[in-house]
Every structure is written in structure tokens, then in C-alpha cells.
Amino acid sequence: MNIQDAKFLMSNSRVEECPAPTLPEYAFIGRSNVGKSSLINMLTNHKGLAKTSSQPGKTQLINHFIINNTWYLVDLPGYGYAKVSKDSRVKWQRMINFYLRKRENLACVFVLVDSRHSPQAVDLEFMEQLGSEGIPFVMIFTKADKQSGTRTQQNVVDYIQKMEETWDEVPRHFVTSAEEKTGRDEVLDFIQEINR
Ligand code: GTP
Ligand code: MG
Image (tube, rainbow, N blue to C red; front, side):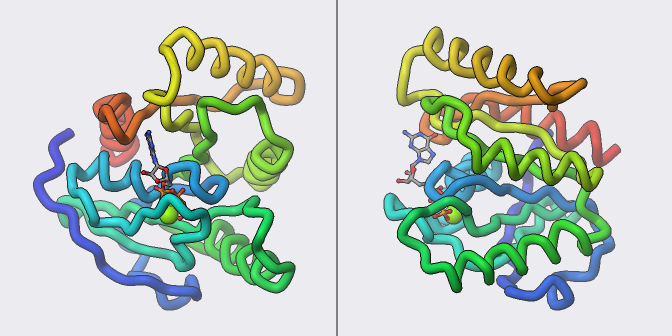
């Protein structure tokens, strides 16, 4: 799929104030610093569209971007950052839970995990929750440029094996690098497939 146009639309803390749910929407979620905002910039070919930072906790709100005037990409704040206060964690949970449950045009959630790491409880629990609520999601293994392809593949296989212990059907997954633009066509083709 070609991206002809990508624009920032608005930031919100409340799902009720998000754009009218008239277009299909794809949301990016995962641990702080996993590369959600960078992946949005890579997919849209638009450096600086979503704000990124080497410090975790950069994205704080629900950010809507409109693509080709026909679908939305949504950048969400990350979870699992140890330095966050209990207060902020509860706020995050409330905002995200509302968003995930109430957003009727949510076509698919992309759950990002770092391709360098072994399966983390916080990610597995988050996906369990999505699964049990019937919220459609796929996985993205990010930052593949940080290690060899063989190492990435091994980590992906280990992760999938871990998921097979509890899942009848392992979610679809992609490997990406925002640095090297790996996985761009695959992710965009997947979105196009659903948009059809
Ligand atoms: P929060 O908004 O804090 O939840 O983080 P985020 O998940 O949006 O991460 P962000 O895109 O801001 O990236 C975090 C850091 O990782 C930045 O320093 C990025 O440059 C770096 N990064 C993101 N993706 C990649 C990648 O594919 N390869 C490499 N080498 N670095 C990446
Ligand atoms: Mg971010």
C-alpha cells in the first residue's frame, strides 16, 4: 500500500473526545520505549510525525493520525515503565481500558515487543487480556536491527513457543526495524487486507 498522506489529527485522554469512529483504526501499544512512535514514523515515511524519545514515557495521550484520508493510526502511551508512579499507572490503565473496549472502529491492535528480549510477563498478561475480551490484535517484534537476523529469528521462535503453551492459535506476527524499514510492506499490506 502507498501512503500518500499522513497527518496528525489530535491528542486526547478521553475516548469520547477521539475523532468520530467512522474510519477503520489501528492502535500501537506495548512497553514504554519499545518503539511504537518510531514505527508509526517509519510506516508513514514521515520522520517526526509521532514524537519519539530515548527516554521511556514520551507518549502520554491517545494520538490520532489520519492516513490517506481513509484510516487512522493511533499512538498510545506505553506500559511497564518502572519509574512511573502508582497514580499514573492507574490513570494509564483506565484510559487504555476505556479506549480498547469502547472504540468501536478499532480494526486491530498492534502489540509491540522488543525482539531482543525473552517473553515478559507484562506483555503476556496484556495479550491474555486482549484475547479474553475478543479484541483483535497482532504482534510486532521491534528493533530487529539491534542484533543479527539469526538472533532475532531465534527470539521470535522462543516467544511463539512460549505463547503456544497457553494459546490454541498463536497471533499473527511481524518483525520490524524502524531504522532499516524492515517489515514496512508486510505491515502495510496487512492493514490494506483488513481495510478492504
Ligand atoms: P513511549 O512513547 O515512551 O512509550 O515509547 P515508544 O514505544 O513510542 O518508543 P519510541 O518510538 O519513542 O522509541 C524509543 C527509542 O528507541 C528511541 O530512542 C528510538 O530511536 C529507538 N528505536 C525505536 N525503534 C527502533 C528501531 O527499530 N531500531 C533502533 N535501533 N532503535 C529504535
Ligand atoms: Mg511513544
